[in-house]
Image (cartoon, rainbow, N blue to C red; front, side):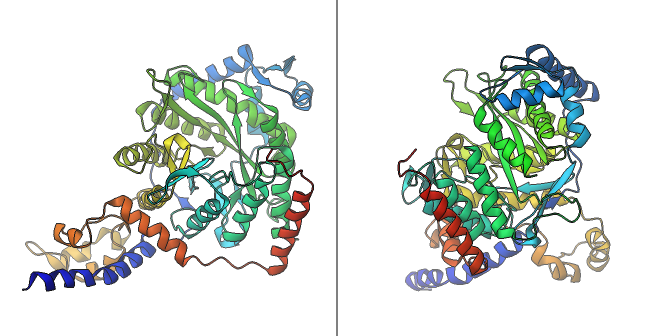
Length: 522
């Protein structure tokens, strides 16, 4: 055969293969609103170890205390509840915070989405995957690293909407620095509501921005604002309230938490810890401090509005003791994650942690193995709300386009892992073994023919073809394939329908609120 013709023949193939890859991508992530795990939890602490961590957390709360800064109302709330308030330092009787949480916080709750088919149940044996959060930079193979813009924010909302393996639109997927700080939250919340119909996260950078988030969500949900099952306002927003570790809550986070709690919106109370700098260098010390800090915030929310949905959050990483830089995908944070997941189950509330974390600047091998070393413990431990599932680079400073679709692919694999082993008659496959018998193969048997399309997870990105075929296609590595995929997804994006009257009301609210702010970027 003429080599030139052979090359031409190879060049004609990608269109057919692209179609097959698209079909595989559609099958790879069945569009479910959230995952319900069917495998056991992985535990690293015994009953005695968990009890010791709870005892040590109570010791921190009782003997050291937690600062609630620049918020006289918060201090008054604690004083009225019987805590020992001295200045801005609050000390808690042993067991006080745990009792407040267990008395009223729901074990699980529903976050309602614009599309009711995409409602998520957070807690129990359920896992919800959400994109990464908070990056001021974005990175792509085409442009490298640059500051994020509102167009990037919209792009990532659209990519999250299209990803079968992601159940949530997330929050500040990237920070659009081309918009004024005091107004950009409006455009971000609008983007979540307009370009996706999955659940989303609201703004927490000021109490009034939290109130704007609620107001915009209420426009979309209209007259259906009460949950008939609970009689309380529907939870349509979940929000990230970070502890200013070590052992400090600031006025910004407290203000946002109060706004959301009073509206029955969910808060994720998360100590943000880089162990060695913001907590002790040991796993046990970090676990006890994380639990103590979280308990104080969770109990505070229950004092503000008993029964308001809360999530115990843990973000614990280590640092390089040589440079002080954050490190990810290392064993110690995984041990913290496993421990905190078990402690949250004992407390009886949902748990947030994990994701696809890495310190790598680009979507390379370091990014892959560090992310895998975070995502797998996340799923084995039983995390209910997984922030930073897709896109995280550079310790969270960058949101990667290629990394996003690569991580979404890995999240699809976790769907299959958490589904466990199929023990149905079809899963047992005895009929296939009867049909084939010894010494033959299973490729043509009836069971294989009936199951082959969905038999195994098939990555839409991984290349499992021959070397010759890969070379004929231009020898693309994973990053190049991911680059082509996110561009294709954005080109094919179709926005979910929205009533024009609702869209007009959202835009009107935004215009009025923006007009109330000065035109400075503050």
